[in-house]
Image (cartoon, rainbow, N blue to C red; front, side, top):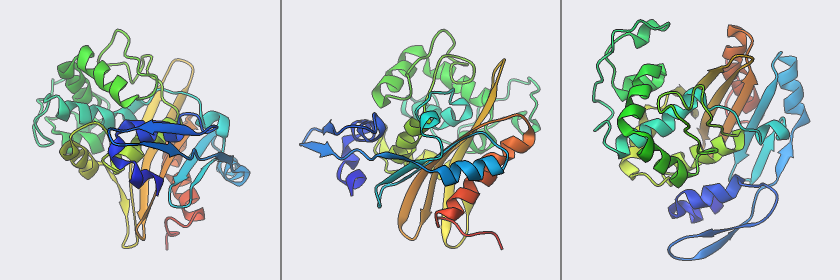
Length: 284
């Protein structure tokens, strides 16, 4: 399959996959130029209706490499850029490990004694704890340790979203200028899953190991949430992959949030749509 042929092409291959979704692309590797058949982004009005029936506004995007299907409930929103919010912690983790800002996932950072709204954050943490807890202060500190120059290097190298940091190294993914589309989110998590990002493989495996998720005997989800709170809007993410029977699909949901119930629907709507696609089973 396409993604396996180009696994060693690093970010070039995955950038070509969803860079345009309209025209053929070419990926350059150190060995050979491989023409890439670009998947067509197909609208799913039935998915859009299911989201509307559940009372949310947003888009759900699903990429199934084995069948070549790339589908979205709202194709326009799938191509629109938004703050990554806490989904950026995946990227931030990789950079922190690669740059030595943290030697490993078990290195503890001391809590700064500032009380935050989540009691679970108010303690010393390591990365294996901070990522599932989505502890903001922990990742703000790792970003400071990495610094603007090296963070910018990795944003450019991976071609992450619009690659903008601006003037705040500890806030640019929360309230700054960084933007990423749901389609770009999918190509990033696919490359992480396939260990095809331009980071050391050991660091990619470490981050994959600590991504939270759900599983049964027949399927497994690993995904990261995000929740952006701006002056005039709030929206949420749930981005990752589902594995079943030797196959893998990549998904991103992006929803407007007006309540805690809307935030929970990042999970429930994703599960319902993955059930519809046969990737997970309905709860008993």
